[in-house]
Length: 571
Image 1: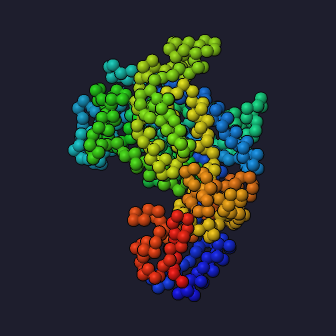
Image 2: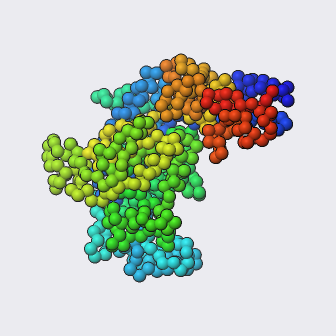
């Protein structure tokens, strides 16, 4: 058995030095040497795909205008990040921005509900809530009463007492057209994905002669983000985001709207950042007229509607999709993930959590009038009849309710390792928030491994070109070398231990993955791997090895690796 062990050890050493693709370990009696991970292709870090999911209900005029006016602050932040990279001799990173709205459908309980019938099963509503044409919608439960599912923009009403949505508030909406339901949207004539590529002249931003390509992209974003206020009053922030990503990835038979090439968004290995913006909480629920939540005249008021009532129902009876489903979806896309959540919260409640994440407490917030509305020519505050869109803030903050589900998703994806940013939709100035979102978009400062290496002596980090060939090896680990293991929470050096997190030493200039290149880590993982019965992985004593891997205690040793050992065959 000792001879077989020595052969395996030599094979491992040669494999690490040659950076081969697989480690092959074979059973030796009852003692099994196995890698925790053999070859890990880490995701590219010089590209980011950004999705804005924007509430397009009737109360969002001011917020959309503020996003548009302050987008320059986002670009300011990006330009500074690009300048920092240039000083280190690193190529600029690129990012690609798409926009969708929160509109999927809006459901109402009809006066005389029809039932789900016919072949195939449909709900046939003769006149919908807004007095539009009759509709026939697929349903799933034969004989069940049907809700009235409105899936299209409406711009006039024949129902007494209901106002109509003026064309001036249409934004990207088209009368009679379907709600986006995750489709990317854009102002007329604009691309649906805006490409801030790495050939832009970022050093010119903020000068008297900025790169006209950047200026054009900024203006296009300002138009695209103004999605309008004629959308659904049943905001489905989370489902709209999930549908947008599923369509872009062509999952579940879905695909993005015509004119969007699948290669445009997202990009293989790129970081994904989703930014949710809304003044009411999420109400993601089944798009089925026999299973959906539905408004009535008594349950349609912001903060006290059927969506809020659903939260008070027993868990088994709730119709809204669990937040945990969305946390699992967005953090299991095989790419780095970050998210920003701009929701109803007291601006004073938004604080740093000590780990670099801003976290807010959801609640109905007090509106703040932007300084730009109080000074300058024609300024009349936020109640003047001639106020600009950004200043159209209702005195009672009508339409705003605590963003509890948005807050919960932020908390859950953060617990899964994602970087997050919370902000209040009532903040008078979105400039600082957008600058912070730029920090989310930037490439990660380091790399996160899926499992903890057993020893730094068998850990190799290299950079692979787009064609799969090795571009260069990175020297490490070590504080003054190309890379090092660091504490995932504090960023401090791991003091001779390994960890899940690797930081790149930019000062050496030798271990930077440029666009099109990929980091590849090869290492022997802790044995056994973390499990429900062994949360940390590895071993504290030989008995941990026998319990998890079998064999007798004489078959194993628990080799020290920091605070935990790893199981290796006894010699």
